[in-house]
Amino acid sequence: EDQVTQSPEALRLQEGESSSLNCSYTVSGLRGLFWYRQDPGKGPEFLFTLYSAGEEKEKERLKATLTKKESFLHITAPKPEDSATYLCAVQEAIQGAQKLVFGQGTRLTINP
Amino acid sequence: DGGITQSPKYLFRKEGQNVTLSCEQNLNHDAMYWYRQDPGQGLRLIYYSQIVNDFQKGDIAEGYSVSREKKESFPLTVTSAQKNPTAFYLCASSIAGGHSNQPQHFGDGTRLSIL
Image (cartoon, rainbow over all chains, first blue to last red):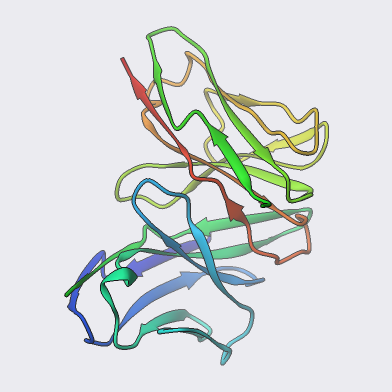
């Protein structure tokens, strides 16, 4: 069974203090790994899709990387507005359907 | 603006009552999905639909039902058989299912509580 584990569950940083969030996965055939940002009381907002090991994507202060077993979301010099829950999901290789398996998320808080 | 609209934002259910959550999208997406989110847990798939008049059970379909009569709409009914319905319900859509690895886009959710 495909599984996604995110760590840490919660992370508190000072403004400007860089760090990384981890997403470890086991999947029979990876068709895509997705990162989302979720603000309280809102739906997840799409950030990145990664398809193969070695791939990297960047958006403002965020950079996502992918290996065969895990993905990292690096946040550089974060600002308070980067505070949110970050979700990772893998797409299962099931014919005829795009099924996503989500991790439980990392709740990131950036203190000013 | 294109997007996914979920309503209502908050919903209360009485014992023995069925309630229906609305999801409408104007993104012209073929595939639509319903997820349930509980505190400290990842999103779990309830039902999904790849085309009109067709849908499949996800991982936690018991106590729920759906319909897909129009491409734009995918309502979810939480029946009285769902004994623990309190949760945040999220609707999503994507360009296509199957071999597509296009991202799913989400609405802003409906929070369901028991009276």
